[in-house]
Length: 101
Image (cartoon, rainbow, N blue to C red):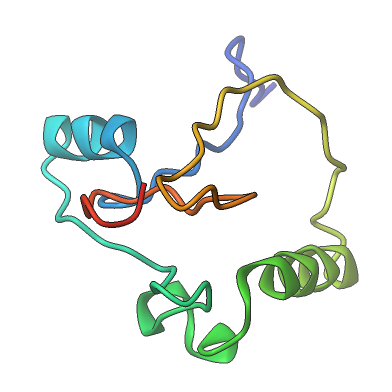
């Protein structure tokens, strides 16, 4: 019948964005990649249409684009631990750079 017993889904991995993503990327032969710049805006690898857009605005634009195409299925809250950066950033951007995290 064409259905799979294993649920289909997606996992977002951004090599270079965080240590766990880097471990996963290396295990699969992916190159380090960062889509969020030091100033919190999207870099070219994040998609040309998002370049220079702040990460929170970009998130809203991506959700809107998915919804417009009928591809957005919703959001779920999940618990996670985010350490504060040494400058007491309220919402740090995970990074492999020792100066940001």
